[in-house]
Image 1: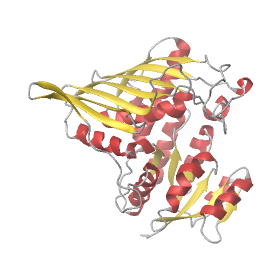
Image 2: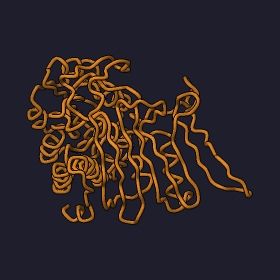
Image 3: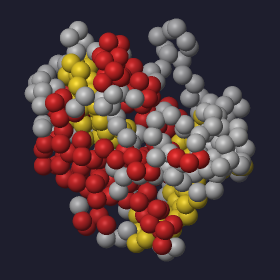
Image 4: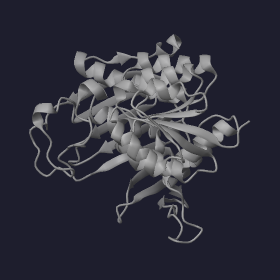
Length: 371
């Protein structure tokens, strides 16, 4: 068994430069980046110079990277439409794969990825780094121990006031498969399902809105071109699970509200509730609520992250995600984010779009039987 993994990066755009490559660079004792690929070769050249090992290879065609037998792991960091075909081919070539969220643009492609992973015997995970936030891990631990009791209601929040991403291809439906729902709604839904440990959806009723494409004023990332904005700005859904639990999903890139919550969840159980929300400092805050001593109480765990420049400083969610991923390959354990879990997220996202288009609820009761 190898001590250090050879990693190939496919897609050297924003998410690669902001999360994956800097995180992997801190974990050179577990893996090193030996190859980089991008359709804009200059981006791959720059990535190799900044993050690669000496002599790191550069490609404009991902197939050439996959043909390199020395590469153990591939990170697929491309526009959404390319996630499935590249991931499947990488698995068939014997690589372990970290694919950025969402898993795929529809459940059929996600199912094909899952089957390819099972057939190849290689590991597949999806980039849901919000599970590695400190407040998320504390909440998951409490849920796993049964502190909230049966969780029968939840809200998954991914709401921005006006922060439409204006770089890359985010507003291009052909390459992304959708807008706010598939981009940030997917994070909130993943976090909520994970904390509930509930992956059996029964039905989905959804609404999708294309209302804000001409309202460019005040956007956090600057104005966008309305002519090329063909994805939804908001989506909302009511999800019923097989055990009777319900989830309300709200997501938007641009909603006229001051109640901003991104990658947050609210859980309502029989014994108590919990909510991840923005605290007074703007940083995420975890709040439990229950009854003790005959009174209603709120409990706010200290999820502060160490002291800067001292050994207690916490690692970022991106580093923790990459560390857990590489260690699970080296130690042959299961990744925290499994392909099966990500597949269910994709099922629900697709059902929201379908419901919005048809005006009817989508039945998912028998969907798992097709795996």
